[in-house]
Length: 120
Image (tube, rainbow, N blue to C red; front, side, top):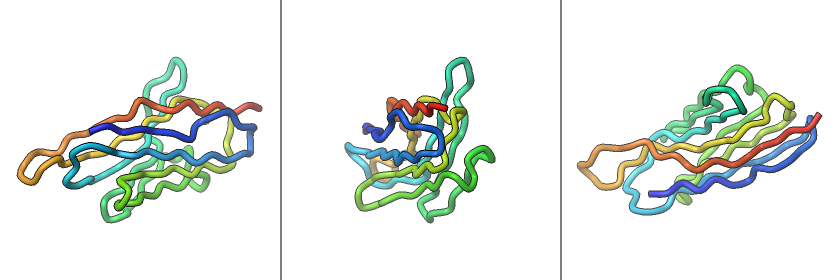
């Protein structure tokens, strides 16, 4: 299983970006999906998560500015980020709890990250 994130880039403060992350490989079911981020010199932190039933959870720092969604038919999770701030600058990682085969245990898989840079 691989997770491929895309959509990062350089944007001015107040701008928007939409991140995408596609899971590929042998996949029976995807449970929770989510986005984390890691800024230079800081620990990786939760941005948002979404369950298979579309329940969402957001970090306080992004509530009201970010929306997580998923397309189960495409094995894809999205993160729409609006009103971006310089403090949102980080590498953004997607993650998914994936069951590869019926009867197996599910595992958390991580993408390699996409850089988001917000200039002031």
